[in-house]
Image 1 (cartoon, rainbow, N blue to C red):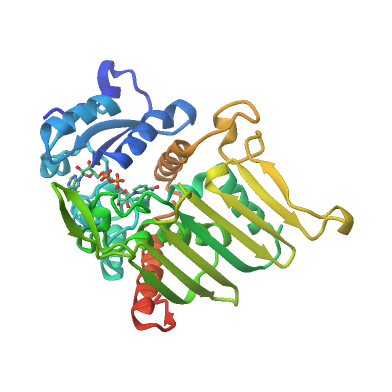
Image 2 (tube, protein in one colour; image 1 turned 30 degrees about the vertical axis):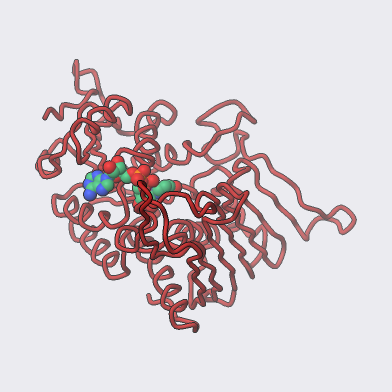
Length: 388
Ligand SMILES: NC(=O)c1ccc[n+]([C@@H]2O[C@H](COP(=O)([O-])OP(=O)(O)OC[C@H]3O[C@@H](n4cnc5c(N)ncnc54)[C@H](O)[C@@H]3O)[C@@H](O)[C@H]2O)c1
């Protein structure tokens, strides 16, 4: 296996090189791989990010992915990758059950780690991961990429400077329909053993992170309701496999300081593709963001004259908006994949400058605390306090 990085060739590279090993090369592998390739092209970063090696379970498939995604090499030997001092970052882009073992191994090897969400299967695991990351003095990040849309970052800035006053309520939905057909095939996402939960860990995890990022609110207690509508799904040849995770998961939340919230995630809502929408109501106004119109932020201000009050739509792609000037002239929009590029750019900047990066594993602990408390609550049919 050759782990020689592209940017060392010819000795032309002046900036320090950050070699990335990426484990997993399907949906998220494509999104992350694209981000590693684009980050230096659109952001002036203090380090050169190099997509070095794809780690897979099958050499042929991993090699094909490396070729396509622009990585220098591919391997099935994770131990060799960890033993290589020229690999600086390990990216965990695999199903949920493997996040804990892979990230813990990478942390033991003193690699920086970027891990997909949800951080792990249990609150206890996330705490172990955060503790080891601190002990090893490496930098870690969690791929809650929706924090880094220009509009969500702008919303966080507006809320922080008081544009909506004190936040009183958040209402959040993340609605999809790819499992609305009972004949939709079984995958690891339908297995408790492999995924931990269904729509909850998949989609509510993003909502929880977004609310924390946009408002700074911390959860106090939750009351959950989980439902699995389709208990078997086809696996081919007329056979079916058991679905033991939720198709839909709703919960109410009380936040520290008195605000309240509602959360709903589902993968069985016909007509909804990737409807990730958050509305925040404060004492002076409201803000709403919807991923399906991700460059727009809807804003209502009670400070406007009464006869001119109404929802306004801010197109967040001018040179005054977060991330926008790094891309195109005013009004030229960005998409889903750009949020991952922003994540890499901010992580590299933080790493080089020793500034904090969020979301990190401590944020992952906070998200998992809410997820797990909501699951306990759904089981018990009662409010559950979110542990610290
Ligand atoms: N941030 C987001 O918006 C977002 C979106 C989708 C998925 N995710 C998360 O990303 C992770 C991966 O999801 P996906 O959609 O890419 O899944 P996927 O099924 O498309 O791909 C998983 C990849 O991991 C590989 N893999 C599985 N087990 C492995 C192991 N033990 N070692 C090495 N490779 C292994 C598979 O071969 C495949 O390449 C999940 O945790 C999921 O929750 C995040």
